Length: 310
Length: 220
Image (cartoon, rainbow over all chains, first blue to last red; front, side, top):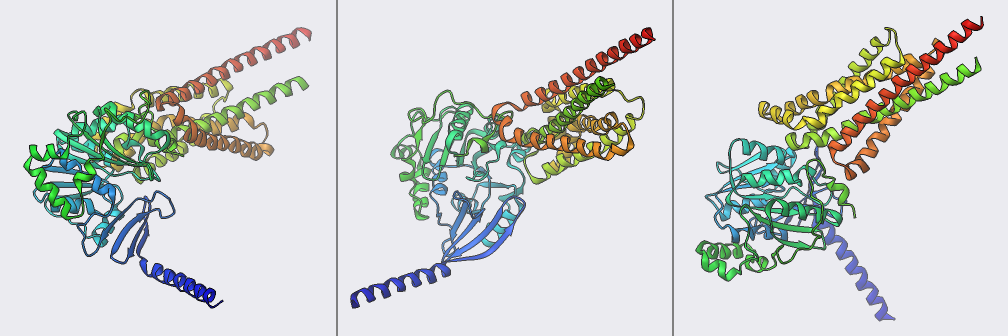
């Protein structure tokens, strides 16, 4: 009998403890309804997160540790960095989809001589990134509050080129359909320098997965990818000039290029085991996981959001 | 006398059907406008601002113009002609939207004014003409001032119901099944075809009346 009571007491204690710590952990320090989404900045102890549209399962978020702002929290942000193994010295970088600006900050730290252009459609997100996420801007790091497609078209007119384009404008809730079409990817391709690479972080599931894959392949040929079936997240790595049939082993890459070895050790210091991550990359030459006859998304036909319904 | 009344009712039903189709077409095209402009002007909030402004503005002018036009010898033939013209003015949206938007994109840096100009160039004219149909329908349907309110109410009901269906069917299904251009061209063909049918009906109706009249005269 006393045993049962003590068990009950212990249980209650844990319940209360969990309740109290949970309350202490998630503290909303800023929330606003912007033109494009509900923005929420949350503090959980040392971790600060930027969330969009809280109720959804596929909430896209950017997080960083306040004490170690350069440390990347999420696997997909780390995965985006594996592109550096393919192109270790990008001089001009374009990031479409700012989030908290942590990617821009990290890249500036890794590549202090590179120019970074950030494009974000929502002015409120830029404001929040500056205010709560220590988003750094200077002579080399610029921010444009503009639709990604419009920025790309204008950049082409100005005959600009980028060595690395990071497309991170998608989440599970709403997909900007005009950033998924063949025509857009062709514009991206023309904006890439000769050895330039595109890294896209996408969240497509159901039918859209096959359509998206076929569209990328139609523009870039075979590409590398890592898919995470749990949250429909996929990182795509494509290059202006076709990639090798299978990702070269990290050892070979390091042997070929000294700066890659230096970069890999620098990345390890900020918690990114890029060698480990790169090994998960599979070329679609050997690992194509969608039917060959999948239709392509175009400006005329791009019902991406309708296709993404599970 | 009884037979004549019945034929008039069929004609009215047909006019309501036409009003429904014009309501359907307006919203179908307005919804596609967002997708048509996106490759050049993006999908920022101000794109929808441009589109809705242009559609509202052109509809308002269309109402004014249609009302005015209906005061000068209104007929089913002229009504049908408006449908044909509406169908024709929709065609440039499918045929030349790309080069038009390209030119505007090059000329206007700010995507707010770029999208406003592009919406105007592409959608102003067809929407004005589609807007003319509502007051013209009222003119054809109303026979005495007592029922004018009821007729107008019924017409708004039918046309707005068409708009609601045009919105949901286009956004839920049509964009999933067809290319944008296919949808625009189909709408254009349907409107023109209905216009042609309207004119043929008006002609046969007139013939019917003349023969009746001739018969009555000869009997007398």
